[in-house]
Image (tube, rainbow, N blue to C red; front, side, top):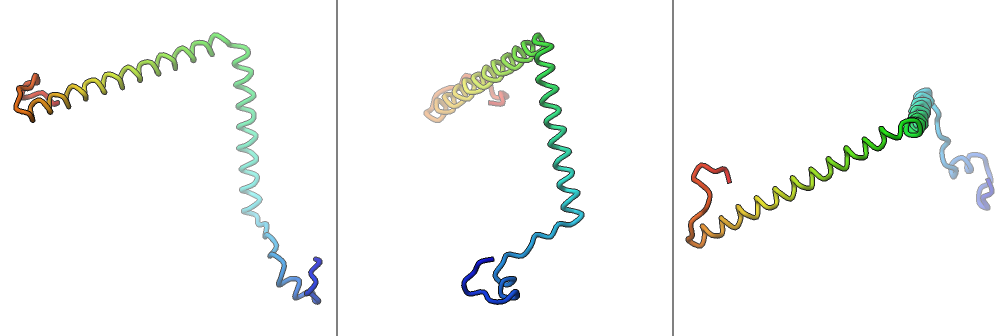
Length: 107
C-alpha cells in the first residue's frame, strides 16, 4: 500500500480495509447460487427449443392470454358501470328521489 504517512506494518493494517473472511457457509451459498443460475439458464434454453419445435403451442398460449386479458378488461368495465349506476342512484336518493333498486338489493 502506498500511503505517505504510513511507516509500519501495523499502521498499514490499521488503515487498510479488513480482509473478507470466506467461510464454508459463504462457499455453500455461492455454490447454491451457481446451481440456481445454471438451472435458470438451462430452463431458458429448453423454452427456446420448445418454442422452436412447437409454434402452435406458442400461438395457443398467446391466444389464451389475449382472451384472459380481454375478459379481465370487460369485467373491470362492467364493474365500473355498475359502480357508476349505484353511485348515481345514491345521489338520486340523497336528493329525495326514488331508487330503481329494491330494498333487498346488495347495491
